[in-house]
Image 1 (cartoon, rainbow, N blue to C red):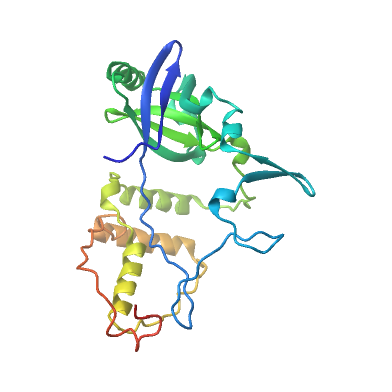
Image 2 (image 1 turned 180 degrees about the vertical axis):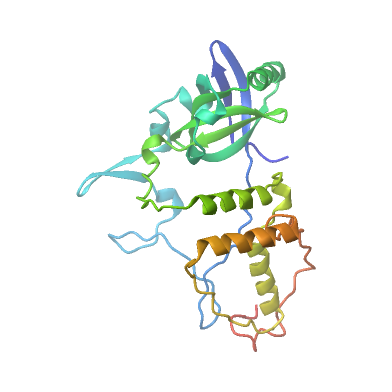
Length: 287
């Protein structure tokens, strides 16, 4: 079982529920490192002091805040916790609201909430009460010395905590010029939306770009040449009505989301080593 990210308790009224948080998301991005193009050596970043130009080990690195030019105040983890010691291990519920009252633009990171030992009954009580009322709890939590506004809600028999972005952190939207549309164009756009309607299932969608990048890596590891193609130029829609008509025809023919069904998961074979072709393939270095 995964290790908890945070341990503490949920507090509402006089009720206290000991819980643990577990990350609900594990990113699967293709991670690249930096290498020297001449010999393939790994490029590593170093922590160098600007005063003596020497590398500084982690045990001598401290957090600091520049109060004014040349004046820096450093704080230890213990001193930072002293800013709000009670909130350090408590999810403090402040009010209950309907989920649609909290804009999706404010949603940030989600965590599973699991009960700690002997708190199963109190956990179940809060879970069932939230599910029956269809409300979510608005609360505060401190994670890594930073306070977050958050939501606590029921989700298929579990409690979930979602941190929120503070309102003053959300940037104003860009200015958009208003453009006039015709009744026919609007009607066709609505028809296109209805023809592409579906029942969302997140499991039906796969990260196709990541799969293509992984395929490129395997192809180059096998010593094969990667053909470089120029990306298509972004064009302007000259005749909006005609483009809508063509989209409707395509959607009706396919009988699904504009000709695209659920993407099947790809299965990859075993990892391919590149020792034999390393010397002849640019970008590969023998180890």
